[in-house]
Image (cartoon, rainbow, N blue to C red; front, top):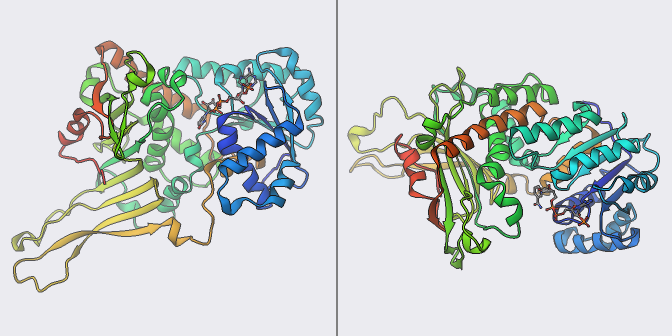
Length: 487
Ligand code: NAP
């Protein structure tokens, strides 16, 4: 694919948490590695009334706080900060835009806009940008999640953005797609011949996708109360992971082929009807407990009032196509879980007959574990014979064939997911960004789940902080004879 770099970046939300913690360090890393175009300029924008020098100081502080020590190179930080400018701007005020356009100047060399602000500001942002001709052919736009809170609100955002930008210039961000291990799912599946023959309902018994956090509400009460675990994690990250596992092989690694195949998976997700909701979904909310040996408060206590928002959800999903007929996809995510762990476990079918049974040898079905957090590893659990003379029977044990990205590629720095996504936005590669039809199919599926909860009056079951969620989540898989992969 031909790369088409723009000459400048306009970063809205430039003073926010995401910008300071992730975006500025990522842009710095690209700069330090010589990956930004020669005269590339970054204009930060937010309401705060500071000037270029004030923003430079803020950026230095953010880099000081969030860059690892071995990346802090004074000369490189100086040359990075020299690329920065700042314009105070209220996105909800149309009068802010002329001075912003003046600051940005000529965009004939290309402009990438990154909207790292609340989506409630997208509409006025797009209208304001249009009013000062900052939406023309040379301009592309990156949108942070959440893209709405249900299908209608997502369509409204998409319609608003589409009035100013064609789909080919819209980059919807799901930062999971920027993670190296997530892209490795594609390498593993489509760069090796041996998985494909068993990568289907004949070879795979079930798939489990877990995103478990140990943190609680942090400072996100306003957002989280309007979202809950389903909308915060499942509608986007978990469904994107599911699509990469379930999709058919794309003909080419490009924006159309990869996204076409993912979209087909989303359209094949079996809707969960209200009458199936109780059997196929579990919601939970943490109460006080201990995480990592530390006593923590319950969700309601953190909030200061009683809430019915779910901080945990587990779902038994199905992809209705030939490849996946009858294979359950167990999805689960929660806050204040026992461990911080994001992983995909693919459990293969057992061997059809065990010749070791008569000699006491016990077999486990093979499992492929793709771990995204806390470390990035891929493990294939296979059966091996324990060394010994076997006079008292054959002893078999599950051992991992392990690919650790950290040790296998130890000479290479592990990049922040946003580095990859920012570079692709700057250079115009949409492959790892989410297309409109994907987002809308994701909402359609999770909206139906929420409608089921509403119809049944479902309230989250309480679980102690520091555990794997309500016991009903364990029952969800145990009923099928399946155990969550929890180590
Ligand atoms: P944040 O800390 O609240 O920052 C919001 C930014 O927007 C600030 O720079 C704020 O600066 C600016 N802003 C607010 N109102 C504005 C207005 N009317 N006009 C212009 N600028 C305005 O939020 P954040 O955590 O950085 O998140 C930004 C976006 O990314 C949100 O949509 C969030 O959901 C998403 N996101 C965040 C994370 C994360 O880890 N933080 C992860 C995934 C997605 P002023 O107050 O000075 O205007």
